[in-house]
Amino acid sequence: MPGSAGTGAPPGPPRPPRRRLFGDRVGSVEVLAFLLIGLVIFREPLANAISNPRLQTWTTVFVSVMVQAMPFLVFGVVLSAVIAVFVPRSFWAKALPKHPALAVPVASAAGVVLPGCECGSVPIAGSLIRRGVTPAAALAFLLAAPAINPIVLVSTVVAFPNNPEMALGRGVASLIVAMVMGWLWLRLGRTDWIRLPHRPDLDDLSRARAFWAAVRHDIMHAGGFLVIGAMAAASINVLVPERWLQTLADNPVLSILALAVLAVLLSICSEADAFVAASLSQFSLTSRLVFLVVGPMVDLKLISMQAGTFGRRFAYRFAPATFVIAVVVAVAVGTVLL
Image 1 (cartoon, rainbow, N blue to C red):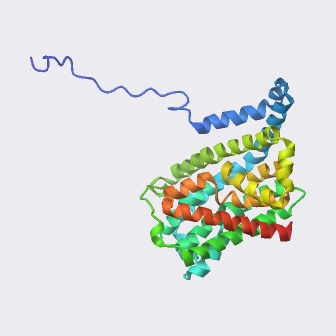
Image 2: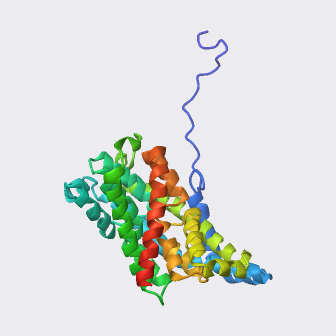
Image 3: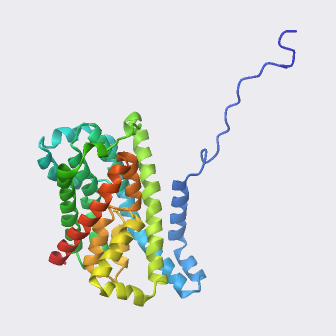
């Protein structure tokens, strides 16, 4: 009979997939959220359960950095997603001056009114270049937006309540570095160093989906790096002998270089790095200012993101130059203001 030779009964309609109570899977964002909530709720029981004084100190430093930094991180991520989704990127081409040399300082200062974290500034800068913005202005915005936006400056004031000049020094130094790097690109940069890959971005999604995609992406990246940074700060305070830190702190050159390299390695989000810098109280204000200026402009995650967005030839030239300029400018500003 037709259909009976080795085929059996015709297959029925496919069964709909079973819906799980909490979605298809628990991602890293959810795990991070539960971990942070648990640490905040059970801070005292955990501290009492740990009898070792060194572990108690580690827990106290870690939780204090996380609790102080998380509100600024979350607010910064949400605001960055709003700007990335709801502010038309064609706005930049119309708002910036036509002359590239004048567009650089305007794009740098725009970081004050259109802030974003460093994770979001890299793809935004790539999109600006695709839309005809001169690369010098886009790169100046890339460096300035994560460092001089109001959220970062307010978090710096909160982290250094007795030294409000730290926020002023951070804003001035970061703005100068962004403009210098933009003008340096105008003179020495080459267009063939930038290779923008064709990738779908937030424009391909509805606004609601694009907003939540941007929030989840930035929370996952920035929150994860914040946890690592808080753990590193706590470990430095506990594991590194006090005399070693004091030896570095007493040497002006070594203290500056040590915190500059530490900023690159820790890769902390700019909305939260001020609280880590404040915990390094052995070091001078100038060396900690170097930490705050270098971090949002040059770190391991930014170098990898720049290589993926603009190409390796660009990243391997741009990052070292930015590091040197940031250290020099931060030291100069710190010497004058602090």
